[in-house]
View 1: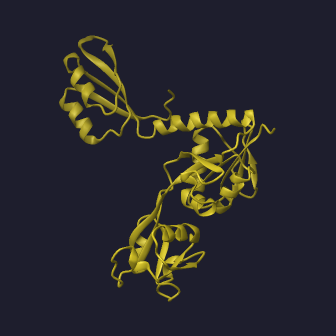
View 2: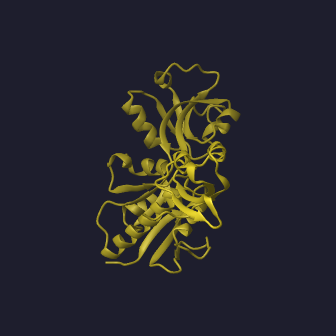
View 3: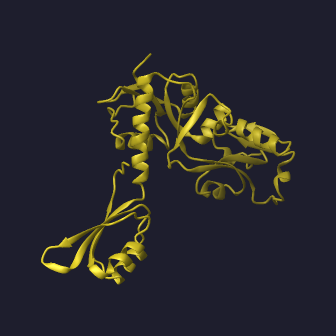
Length: 295
């Protein structure tokens, strides 16, 4: 069986750069070219497939690629309820970027009185499969109008009465006189693989990648904090640092009354926390980012 691992990502679009950055942070670097379908990693037996996002679920399902990164919205549209195990593809990581939601929206001039408002309506969407499943699950009889782009203009040109589309900030809906009423799916970028067992070498590579992604994930909000403090303030300071285990306490040269305290805070360190540390007696406080945490 093949030793080479193939990862499919979006060639261009809202997830492309984030995917490349994630792989680079995990030590997987590729030649920066977008004119080729497959690019080989510089130091690993890994190929990168640069494809359309809506092709990624099919490539992973058919084992053309052994890993894929795409939005959950694309995955559920193409393969069904993947997050509920109804597919031969499984989600192995939520990656924490590409957040959006798939929502129903109505013109502001139409009053909303619950899901029954959509009964008998024409609903324009680029996600007909997810929408149909949602309508069926909720016993709503409506017409699904499939549109591949500019879904938000459908009501204004009388193509549809309502829409079902991706929403990030809601600004696009607002500018087109629409209001969001119902969220069908909360989406973000996910890492997927086939459910079937792969070759030993491919499974080993995937396990190594997962360990690296976990290390990056643990470091996301973590900070390394260094400060000087009076010895009598050690306990109080240790209670103020969020998510900390035990600090490292070291003596200061030429000062028997003070120590240096080093700690890893596994939660975000707010300005208020730093101010409380200072009030507790800490000085020369440094808060530094952490690139990786390997446990």
